[in-house]
Length: 264
Image (cartoon, rainbow, N blue to C red; front, side, top):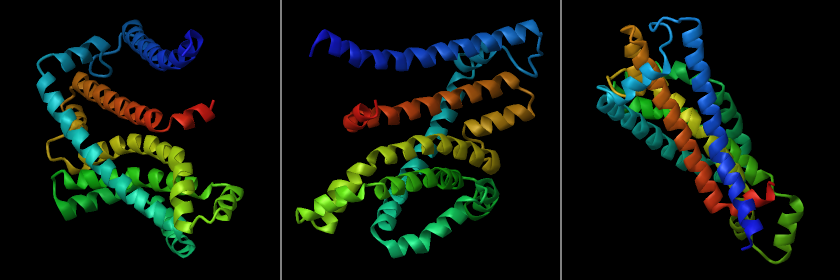
C-alpha cells in the first residue's frame, strides 16, 4: 500500500474522530460562557464543571451502576428487536401474501405513541426491567424491520433475472443476492434504532420507576431540584448513546467495507 493510499485511508478516520470532538468542545464552551455571562442560577442550568464534579465525585459509583442498568435494558431490548425485525423482514420480503397482510398492521402500530403503551406494560409486568426492555423493543423494532425490508425490495430486477438465468433457485437468489444487497439498509436501521432504544429505556424508567436506571436518576433529581445530578445523567445518557452508535458504525465498516467504498 502506497503512502498516498494510506493517507486516503486515514484521513476519514481522523476526521471522523476530531470533528465530533471539536463540536463537543464548542458546545461545552458555549454552555460555560452562557452560564457565566447571564449568571444563570445553578438550580436552572449548572455549569459544566458542576456536572463533571457529580460524575467523577461522590456520586460516581452510583451513576456507573445506573448507567450499566440502562445499558443492559437497551442492549437486551435492542437484540430482541434485531432478531424479531430481521425475521419479520425476511418473511415479508419472501412472501407477497404476508407482505400485503401484515405491512398495513405494522404501519398502523408504528403510528401508536409508544409512551401510551408504557403504563399498560407496567400494569402487566410490574416495576422490574421487563416493561422497560419491552418499550426499547417497541421503539427500536420499526426502523430495523422497515429499513431491512426496503433493502430486500430494492434489488434491481435485472440483477434478479441475471441470477435466475444462471439456474439459481429462488432461495439461492434470495440468500446470495437480496440479503447481501439489503445489508447496508439493515445497518441504517440499526443506527436509527439504537438511538430510539435509549429513548425507550429512559421513557420506560420515567414511567416504570423501580429506582434503577439513568432515566430514574434524571426524574428523581428533578423532583429534588438537584439540577447538576440531572445534567450529569443527561450527559452520561448522551455519551452511552453516541458510543453505541459508533460501535454499530465500526461493525458496519468492518463487515461491509465494499459498501463504504461504493458510497464515496
